[in-house]
Amino acid sequence: MIMTPDLKSEKLVNNLLGQALDQMADSLHFIWQPATSTLTVNFRLAGQLGSSWHWPAALGQTAVNYLKKLAGLLPRQNEGSFSLIHNRQLILADLIIFKSIPSTSLRTSEEKIIISFNYQPLTIFKLEQLGFNQLALSQLKPALTLSPGLILIMGQTNSGKTTTSYALLNQLNQAHNNILSLIRQNKYQLAGINQVLINNDQQLEAVLRQLDQQDLDVIYCQEPTTGWELNQLLHLAQSKLVIISCQAPDLLSGLKYLNNLNDAPYLWPALKLIINQKLAKRLCGDCSV
Image (cartoon, rainbow, N blue to C red; front, side, top):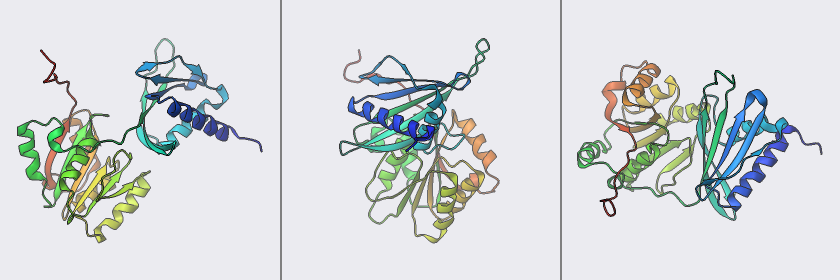
């Protein structure tokens, strides 16, 4: 059998992932320079980045394409996730892409792809464990009723939007509540809710078209990307509690983004709460001086 470049790349990537998991690597780092077809790879082990090595030049582009395919990325998306089975253990892998601005002197651009591995099951926190102050909690908890409306969660990449979203779902997760979660990254498993992994906008659209006919109390949707998706979710928010998380560097950018996507008159009347989330360093209460 003659192996095509695509099959060779898939085999090499799969072997590399296996080696990383064997060594309990924290993450894998790929740097792709399209102009020179150069792909370098290194492992981060116990917090230390190891020496890099070069991927076969002829297979660089196909390897990058396969990594994006594994994470279910659409052309404009820069983060995703996938799962691996290693030694009978489920490992969750998060993939993030950073694109550099082309250098004036070198006239080259590069793409950095980082795959981080989660070896332990992720804990679903309670709201009180997430660092919200008492004022924020007093404003947040009254919105967590089954009355129809929209809760928006905004923040930068890796600011904990999904963690906060699942803390809200955990609070709402009662035996009599019917909850549906539409996710693009399979980070959490919460018993008692229905969870659908969304791989592309066509799949999300097909699911959303069916929800009017279902007896749901709460719908969570991770990162709607088209105006139609947002409008459909707003329509559902007239009769159900809808929670949406979206990536935005700040509150104003997020509101502008939603306003550009949406042409329906019921965006703002449907709003119950907006959470603009940022991570901040805190001093340890036990060991700080």
